[in-house]
Image (cartoon, rainbow, N blue to C red):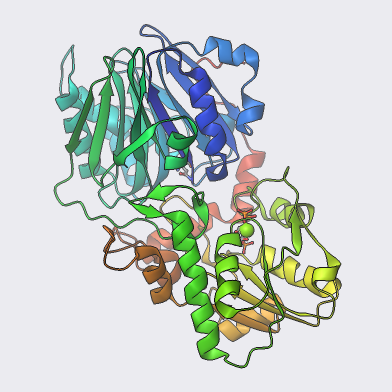
Length: 504
Ligand SMILES: O=P(O)(O)OC[C@H]1O[C@H](OP(=O)(O)OP(=O)(O)O)[C@H](O)[C@@H]1O
Ligand SMILES: NC(=O)CC[C@H](N)C(=O)O
Ligand SMILES: [Mg+2]
């Protein structure tokens, strides 16, 4: 996952972009970048690292201008090299800067096309650079010296015709404006909002509404699937549907894990969705295990807290915070390799023994993916003196790769792949394991009767990929090129590639 943001302001936007990236940090911890436009020149700073480490005062003062775009990265293509940090830039036509969240499923084909037909060079392994060049080519086809919003909309139509997969993007053309667009399935989230100031209205486009809230912007709407939302340099807002048959089918894993609970995605409160997951899971426990002997419900911080609290309430069992999270360690699931992920769980979580001693504990997590967290946490609960250790997951078993922007490319790395629930239970070393049913998860997120969403992308649970183009061949080549050891090898050969001037 990645976090994206774009702002058109009435004053310098560098600090606002930085602040927005800070609240989107949970979507990507590998690299951060900002490009601003002062009407004449672009200014860029991007590098590997967290937002607070990438931008020093000397960079901030150079990020001049009243509009800009920012990105925090969690790679799903290419390598973790700083050359693949975003935003990306291409100088023709007009100069375009783009920040992308998602993953293109036809990136290889597009890369060939972009070279052979469009005569464009792609300098990295990132699919986002391809997306930018496809857009640039489609805009170039308009063949105009001065463009207007209709030209941008037509170019986005071209992107939708050519690109497959998940893409929410924010782009900027210096002196012209910023615009955000979302793939025709609306797989990745993207919202926009406005803020009134004495000097006039300012606009923000961002991955999650939490970025709007914390900067004092009011949510206007989600960018609809296929839609493009454009704010020109005068601060005028223009929107248009650019896809012939958009079908909203957002990624359900955003609600399970990725998004912040205080965000609202496609009109659904993530917090409420997670509470309902807890409720449904409690109902399942009552159904399949009416004579349970759970003494206490303990969440695995952070993300599972909301669901676990509700689950405990519904079961009528005490809730206790038995694991303390080190606030200086980030999210382990989105760390780049298994060694660091494993090590970080122990650095991140520590047990308070007295909450476990001689008790039958039910540990609750939002999901079990590679099993890195659950395996260690179950052992920690035993070491802390628990009599029995049960485990419940607010999501069903994750059995299939994600191809739309979550870095789960290899089925063989997923603990639930090719395993029954009982086999997973044994592999994790728990006394009992309970998973949410998929239909319950869907109902929990959908908020019956009121939702705009008829369908979610649930591919990691059922291998049904909403874009309909994901073949076994694609999945096996993805597994080969992006499994953990392939990624490690690639990062050892991390070459320096040509970049736009970086404010070092
Ligand atoms: O089975 P795994 O491969 O371990 O993945 C699942 C775990 O990873 C995530 O936690 P993470 O530490 O990333 O973030 P959090 O603090 O938001 O819970 C998620 O919440 C689960 O705890
Ligand atoms: N997680 C994402 O959204 C990744 C964006 C893009 N595919 C990259 O690898 O940089
Ligand atoms: Mg977690």
